[in-house]
Image (tube, rainbow, N blue to C red; front, side, top):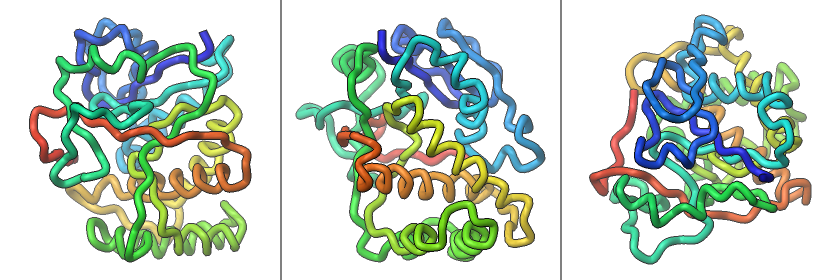
Amino acid sequence: MSTINICVGHRTFPENFARYVDLMLSPVPLNTRARSVHVPDNTFGPYGDTLSEYAQLFWLLDHLDDILAGHRFLRVFHYRRFIAPKKPAQAAPAINQPWAMVIQAHELDQYESAFDRSEETELTNTQISLDQGILGQYAQVHVLEDIVNFGHFLAQAKVIPDQQVVGFLNMTAFVPSSSIATYGKENFRAIFSVLRRAATFTESPYYQRREGYQRRAMGFLLERLNSYLLLLLMAQGRLGATQGQNMVISDELSISTTS
């Protein structure tokens, strides 16, 4: 089999479909039939809890060769979000995230192809356009100061070249939930090595810890840089990805946030 399926989250993937999961990575211990690894947020220091799923994905980066032994691709998905290869006719769009389609857990048997372990291509999540650009979009839902300071840090610390910092802060295309994708091994390594360096923003004087929902600001920032790096590799012809459909497992058409 070419592909290994890796689920990330603080809750289990629906247990009736645990067969879709080869490895579950979680910040908390989980009772699941799937093989699981507990990766506490504090594995990555006092600000690990601000990273969202990137804490667990950095652990995956550190163990990539062992986990992917014999596989060419890794499919990353969340406990309630995954990518369908094509937009399904029977699903409804989320009210508050119209780029995402909603299904209930019992409908997952119709999506077995979305977890096929014999993939031969990379696959990215649904791309959207931002009328106000990434800064305007970020300011609508988060704290503008954080992404501005993050851009300052990326340039000063030379995490990415200056022209890429400019491209990042001016991007109008965005892939929400960009960590979810089917990656070739080396493209995963290339992207997440940059994200790992970018996460040291928490050690800089420009970083400010937030509370409540905004506590995960570092994860929100990495999501946007993750999107930029995916699209950059695609534009350079280094990542031959096609775009799939962002899918959410939910009993409601309005998708709730998690703190």
